[in-house]
Image (cartoon, rainbow, N blue to C red; front, top):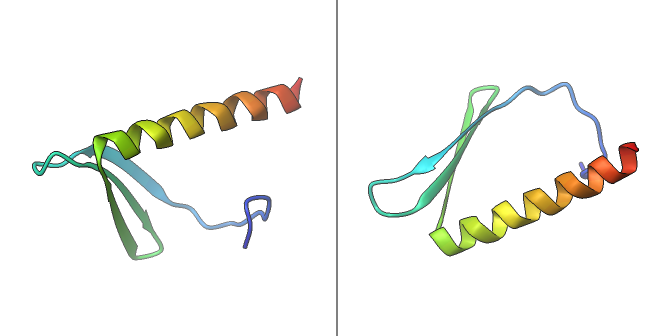
Length: 62
């Protein structure tokens, strides 16, 4: 399955700091739980990638 493939799967996403100084993205879908921990630097890079993708998606809409 790729980025452009549509799906009916619903998921919950939680994002927050851990007590170990990491940033956790926690995904839960259909009984599956996926915790992903990143350093603050990695989280900043991910945030920049999300912002870039949002800008590109908005540009395609207009």
